[in-house]
Length: 187
Picture 1 (cartoon, rainbow, N blue to C red):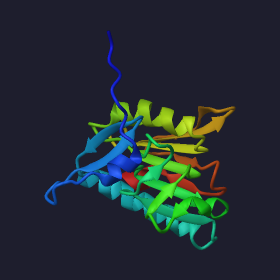
Picture 2 (picture 1 turned 45 degrees about the horizontal axis):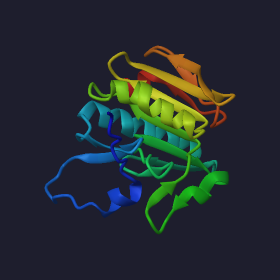
Picture 3 (picture 1 turned 45 degrees about the vertical axis):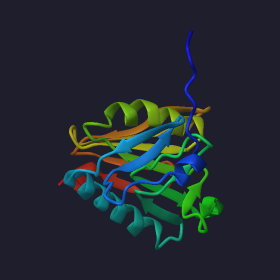
């Protein structure tokens, strides 16, 4: 006989107490508490470069806001991932909960930077969650292969919209005109 494990809710997670010396980051994926180590230096460099590229394009045009991890993106009672970067359009700004300090709903675009320990989680688990909750665009940044993959929703399923290796560029479908040269973020 199989015993069903109780799924952790986001509210239960927020009530948990962690040791002040705990250096890990946590997110909830399908009711499971996932502990992540602090990002590697290369991961941080890529994240900072992407953030600058996004903000330099989005902010002057007043298209919305860009946030970097850690920020809780509460998609449901049992799903609160912390993507590496998110974009929330001005039209969707109501999902930013200033009081709780969280994003309460689906951003317009999420980015995950793959780490050796997160390949399966980013490529399969998180991709499925983002697809399930209707996030229009999902970027996967692969430092090991120096590539960018962009997935967009088509009839509720993610399809590859663009791919670039270190010598090519990708263009967002959600942020019209935003173009990223892959090589620039891996240097």
